[in-house]
Structure formats: structure tokens, C-alpha cells
Image 1 (cartoon, rainbow, N blue to C red):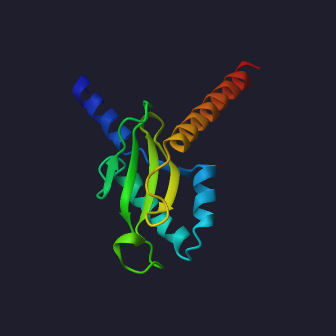
Image 2: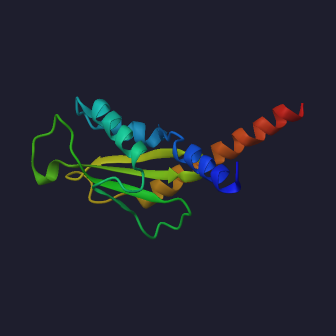
Length: 147
């Protein structure tokens, strides 16, 4: 087996690694306040789609100038089954993609008709909370392995 085939095997295993989609506590609160019957099912469908194409999902774009090293995306034209059709009935979903961790953090969900834009402060808070929780888990694992 040569170096090229070993590298190709490694790349295939990394590419095939499934992406886990998790919801921040803030996302869960926002979702609960929406009062849309199909919202949980609709978000589950979105999670499957975004896990397959986190950086290139149609209808999403990267949010610039947030001051974070983690790419953050917004899905603009997400429609719930229980909402009537119309331009003001779209749902916005904001998520961060932690590529090295293989995780997507759902941060914010809101109706376009009720909120003009995403909340940069909330985005930064959720990313920082995720990083703190991750580093605490790593410290706990090191302490466990050391004992």
C-alpha cells in the first residue's frame, strides 16, 4: 500500500464522518415560542438537509463580520408546512458549523415577519458557550484518564 492510497483512504473516512446537529438552549426557547404546529418536524427535515450540505445548502449564506473564527450561516427561505404561503411567512434559521468537531450548532430561529435580522450578540454567546462546554468536557476527560 503506497502513501497515496493511505491518504485517499483517510480522506474518504473523514468525508464520510456524519455531522451531528445540536440545538442550543436559546434555539430551543425560540422554537418553543413560535407556536407553529409543524415546527419540530420541519426543523428535523432541515437538520437532515444541513447535515448533508452544511456549507453549500441551497438558500443559505454565510453571515459576514461577526468577529468569530467559526463560520455562521443563515437559511433565508425555510418554509414551515403550517404557515400560509407569502413572502413574509418564511422562517430564518441561523447555525454555526464546527467543521473540526463534525457538529452544527443551531442558534436562532425566527419569522421574517416578526424579526428583521439575526442577533449577533446571541450568535457570539452561543458559540462561546459551546466552546466553553467543549473545553470543560476535554478537561474532564483528561482528569478521568489521569486518575
